[in-house]
Image 1 (spheres, rainbow, N blue to C red):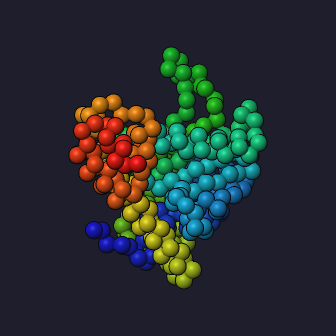
Image 2 (tube, helix red, strand yellow; image 1 turned 60 degrees about the vertical axis):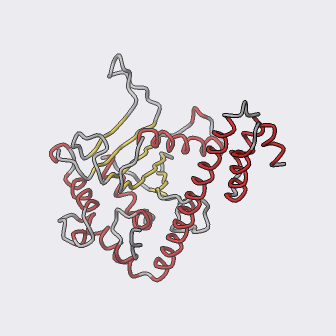
Image 3 (cartoon, rainbow, N blue to C red; image 1 turned 90 degrees about the vertical axis):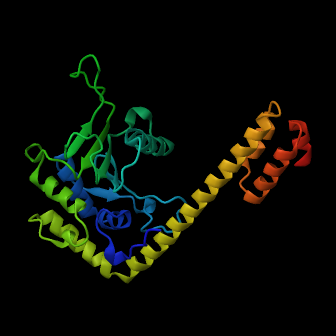
Length: 287
């Protein structure tokens, strides 16, 4: 089992620390301007969706959601470990932004631009780029843009094309990649220095220490719930596999088995399924 980190051991790439640092709207604005390459007058971070501020929030959110003065929406997520299907994850984030705006009463024709940004401590596409930017274009003619307002950016700490991106972005990504001791070095960049200062203040804060402890407990609970969920699903599949050998399984019975989450109940179902001579007999045994 991996040893649980203490707050003092975290770096900017740890989700809790990243969320706490980027809750500072000045730093978040500076980060977005660095990545996007254009000035933003004001950024408002939605703190209600951050575990740093709402430890009772069910389902841990590790991303930063923000908007600017033009109502452009931004979703930023730190990805310290490689995950599958990042493209589909970005699609999900875009859909979440749009759905929240539509539910708030906005017409689809009024939907603002949205940016989903992943900061990856790995190369998501293997092309050694510091930045991969995706905007929808016509397959038959790349000059024809869809202009749907959605933009997806993947930043990589493993890039090698320094001449193609701003020097400040390279230094920021080197800072993200750095381990604990390396992260305290001088990266010769003012923005990185401000980030280092913010990290230092968070580590000295008693309030943030308490929030981190709550965060860790919630993560532990969610992991345990996930494990229990997985065990229950596995048991349900075993029961259905046994029953399938006995005949056709009615939809309602299948639904009942798949929705059961009590492991003890599922264990009793499994024993009954192993002994039953027909689906009907099994069904009568569990009533």
